[in-house]
Image 1 (tube, rainbow, N blue to C red):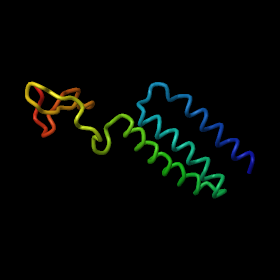
Image 2: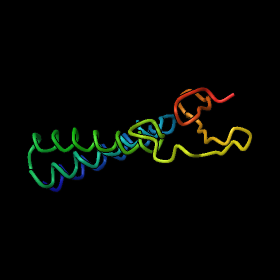
Image 3: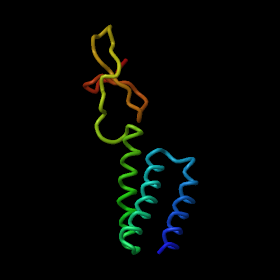
Image 4: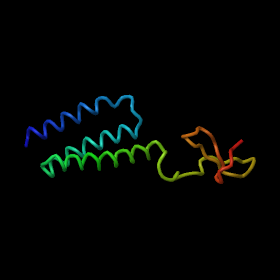
Length: 108
C-alpha cells in the first residue's frame, strides 16, 4: 500500500512539473486530477477509486481554473467602467479583448 501511494505521489509531482506552458484551467485540471487520483487511491485502495478520483479532481480543477481566467460562468461584475459622456457602464470581455456596454452593444 505504501509503495502504491509513493508511486501515485511521484507520478503526480512529475506530471505537475510539465505545467509551465499551460493555461490556468489546464494547470488546475492536471493538479486536480493528480490530487484526486492520490485521494481516490488512499481512500478506496484500488485503481477504480483512483480513476474516479482523477476524473472528479480534473473536472473540479478545470472549472476552478476556468473561473480564474474569467471564461466560465457569469461575469460577476459587469459594471467595470463608467462612461461619463453617455452615463452608461461598460465592461471588458477578456476572451475577445473588446469593450461592451451592459446590454451587449459595442463600446465605441
